[in-house]
Length: 454
Image 1 (cartoon, rainbow, N blue to C red):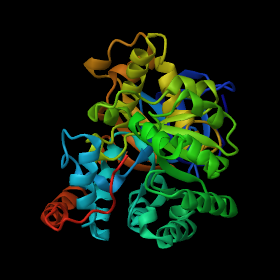
Image 2: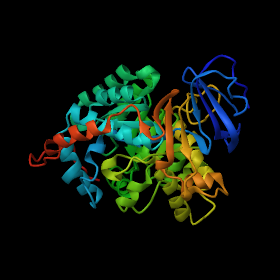
Image 3: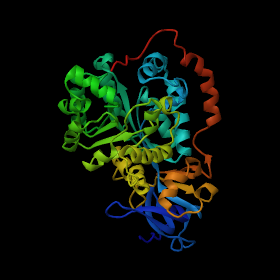
Image 4: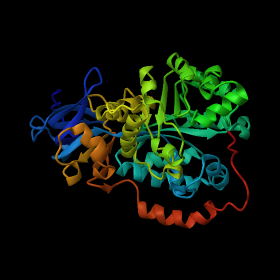
């Protein structure tokens, strides 16, 4: 326990229970605690008594009956696709892409992206998400939304090889132009879409650019077993083997989904030269009726962190990482046939430390500890659905809901307080988006941004 500094604090949160990690990354809970925030960082985690009236502060939050958690991290999403929520329902993956989503995305304007991203950020803030990793189009517009709403994000300009070299060059230019923006809250990545839409030559060039410029790579790979089987039939290699032979695994890479990762892929991932991580978004896999899920246990066994994600709201209908945490735990139990895996404490570890590592922010967020950025949320456990509390970790994972998040804080700035959203005007966004929907969703033109053929 660290004593608070005698200097005035920017924010003091008192009376809460704080989720903490020990030196072995084990989760614990500190009762009747206080968090002192200065200059956007956690200055101390101490007792409520020690941080009482004797510690002057510009702002104070009485959090009795609440739990302070590190802000949740959405490790893979497409925030602007909130504008397409519910547009393509009950379809197989190929029809979902080719008949609806990719034709509609050919209509996208920068304004559509702004509106979708603002709606998504409002949803995530209300659900306790403080950071998200995103790859999409018109990403300068998304960066502007992140700057304005106060969230933290890793952003990448997605590209397909069908765009020619200009697509790859635009991805690099965006990454170099925008990294470090929003007072350092924005980091960037190169974002080739996937091995089935980006050639080996482009992936090799991307890996070289990533190494030259110190950038991570964020892409889809081995999303499902069909993609893996098709890749083997066409190229004699799994998608993960493609990433290895093109040098992508020698960069810091975040792989979205990975439900098609096979036993033969695990040694490649284990000896990857860069920081390799996988993001799992289980709700979408259920919705598309994919036969498998991300092999979390196998990846954990080789030291690959698995972060929690939602994917875009067009496929998942939700940006609720809280739900992803519970689903990951439940689906892993079912898949492994073992009720002792994934435990509630393990699920919380994926939601905090592993998710922070997955997006390259393991030294900055993911824990409430001195020196870490003050990204945290307050969760109200006084409702009937969370009482009584016999096992606090289980209550958080399996009983609490995203609607129980009362307050969301990023870099010490309160973005939502007592459920009041402070940085996004949702009615204004919804009104303007409704005006845009007829043009945005028109598919009569017959265009597509890409062809899904795996």
